[in-house]
Length: 201
Image (cartoon, rainbow, N blue to C red; front, side):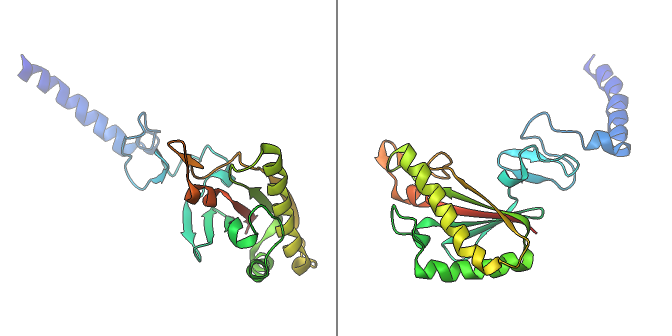
């Protein structure tokens, strides 16, 4: 009985294999499981796998396919033609302040040169804090820091056609845990204190 079923199933399996090989649309269909392995080159985004034919569902500014640490205090990420530079607020500012340090001004001068050479359109500058302090105070501080970075960059780019979009998110978009098991997490909070500069090439 089982041998008869196997003989009947073989032509079906062969037909299915030929269909997959001859029809790219079928071969590149979206996976039904995030663990399914697709044929050919794929790209991994978090726990999801997408084929080269499918567009990324998340907004481009929230998904970066290449990241690297530039100097331990600055991280660069890229997706398509969009660049994001993440600067540690601890290097830019004193704790709880929005006054840019002298060392940070030198770093921002280098970033201004890069913006002049590469950026087009609108430069987005986002400020973020950790969870220490009240929500309102953190929101205000994060915006003040974003504005301070813009104010340091803009004079070096007065003859460019760049515009700026400023936003402060306070503690609402952490990239690390502020606390772990109910205890303070200084390293996580340090990661959350940051300023992001995004631009299109």
